[in-house]
Amino acid sequence: MAQVDKVQEVDYTGPDEPIVESVRVDKVGRGARSLRSVRAIIAVVITAILLIPVAWMVLTAFKSHSDAISVPPKVIFEPRLLDSFVFLFTDRYLLPQGKLKQYPEECRETWSQCLANDCADPRTEEKLTWYECVALESGQMVTGPGKYLDYVKNSVIIAGLSTLAAIVLGLFAGYAYSRFEFPVKDFQLFFILSQRFLPAVVIVIPIFLMYTDIGLHDTHLGMIILYTVVNLSLSVWLLRSFIDDIPPQYEEAAMVDGYTRMQAIRKIVLPNALTGIAATTVFCLIFAWNEYGFALMLTSDAARTAPAFIPSMIGRGIVEWTVIAAGSLIFLIPVVIVTFALRKYLLRGVTFGAIRQ
Image 1 (cartoon, rainbow, N blue to C red):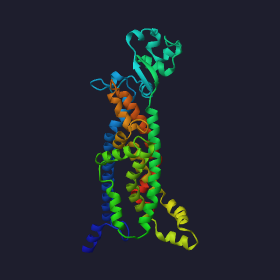
Image 2: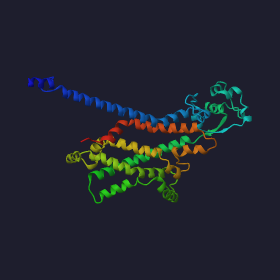
Image 3: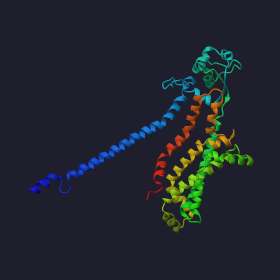
Image 4: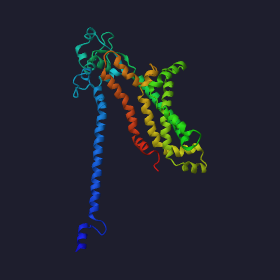
């Protein structure tokens, strides 16, 4: 009788597995799923909070000047799709009321009516372009192209070439530190990493004096060299860690078959380190693209980049917050596209390295 009670208490579903164990596994599974759900909700909330400034910047880029500075802030507004971007890429001045009234009323109401009526400049009798009509709607006259596009080109040149140089140099240096042994190797690696310890404000004055003496101030070459040196410590450390994950036996076997060291690097190391190279490229590009302190102090016009130019618009008469937002939005797009295009390699590279052993 006691034996029968024991069997009923365990309640087998089969010859070997009791229901008690399956119930316990189900409870653990539900707990893990609940924990994952909570983590996902927290991640979504944090992401939404971090994206609020970006969303507000996007909205401001399509507001009128009055809506942008209104108190309380306007979330629902009549969008102005062209104004901020036209003002960003042109130089303008505010027309006095006397000169503004020289234009017919139908030319001053909306830019679309200005175009439809073939409005012309009263002084030159030349037909107004579409962007001049947009400016006229706000009571302004276009005097010529702005310099924002030139500064964006500078950012592309400086960020692109400095990132390429940092990746190439960092790849070979990282390979050497990963595969070879030589004196004070650890000290050298620490010294390379220590270059990131100092903030830009500490070293920018000596660099400014040195660049002024050797003629590299406000030059593309000077900024490319500087950004390459700053990014090199990061690229060496990251690429070394990725190459460490590639078994050296692969290269040794290739060299036994007749490959040279460079052929082994090109055909074995580079393909396997592709995820690490992509991740390092994104990090170096983001720094060079967004850097502000060095660009502000070491450039004035010829090599000035967009991050150093955008804040300068605050001090040019009326603060055009919509124009600043439009410039920031345009400047944000390229790095977002690159990061999104390399997201697969970025996540795999940062998380696992090149080869998971």
